[in-house]
Length: 468
Picture 1 (cartoon, one colour):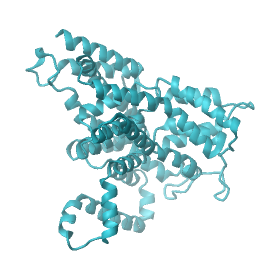
Picture 2 (cartoon, rainbow, N blue to C red; picture 1 turned 120 degrees about the vertical axis):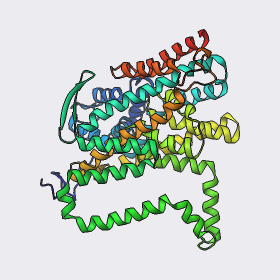
Picture 3 (cartoon, one colour; picture 1 turned 90 degrees about the vertical axis):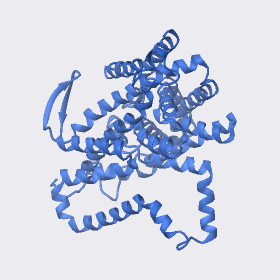
Picture 4 (tube, helix red, strand yellow; picture 1 turned 180 degrees about the vertical axis):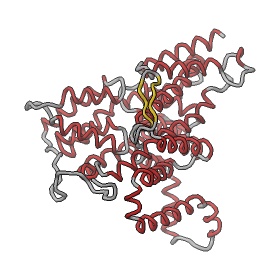
């Protein structure tokens, strides 16, 4: 394929897309539910464990297997390309292959159910007993451990994303071979600086990085499509300007341009509802978390913590810890957000649980839609060189945005606060918390399980909290 073409390398006819979807039956749905309920209960260790268990038990050539190795690997590749948690989407894909749309729904629901229940239970303990000294002491150690975990995950993601282009420099770091494309490193650094200094909408960051990557990696295609791209760029700049100055624009138009009263009142009432706002925000977030569950960090930090004020930075980091303690996807941290919002709004556990459920549905709904609705079409274009170039830039920007948001969160996680032992009261940063984060980073990058690190950090933090 030439650089200019942007065509799709696909042996399938555009009119005859490969059929993946299976057909549902009662026996198949029971089979899907049994496997994914088991996976949701015992799948500690993160996405790699989930993927390995699915491949080991569901893939083969016998009559009991759900699909063949080729289809499984193609599904995995496309799930890694789509926004959303890859292992969860792969599970939905396997349910879809086995039992159609209903099978996809059963697979996703049974896989997520144990994690949802665990997160709700831990959220109850956290908010009901968080001021109890023993619980406060435990999270004194957990908070910096989560920062170390995020940094470790970003380290691994950075290694993968920076080698997607050409190999400008090669070296060994931490026992791993690194290959870096300077263009991708520049995009990563740009996203990091933008997140720390400006904290823009992550979707805008990712879109800009993807567009720049296309220019850098596919200049021939850009030149060949210059007219169309110029119009698209102009439109994007207009939309970006309207978004950046929306407050001033709204004030300038106040009283001059109005929606019909019924429409305006309906929209205002809908957005004023915490249920609508929670669901729409989670739907928006779930639609753009490229690169896995931790990509929700810049979204939550910007909107939930900074703009909406639903959580404090400390509560959000503790919510990530709760998500990491479960056998399911870390995106389930969104249930923690919904629990807290509705607990503050209504003051009862029942409404808080309902809020957690609404947040979960909003965050994971895009994954179902991507698999059941868009999968065959994404399968056609995944080898498109222009699409791949855009994803190079997006993946690099994702890492930069995660690290940038983590810098803000670390400011609170390392701070000397009221619960910090008095011996450190005069220090600019709590040295115990900094040391825990550094130790966690070192161990996590050497494949120590996150759940062990969180529990261990909590135990060490408790000891320091009460002994010093």
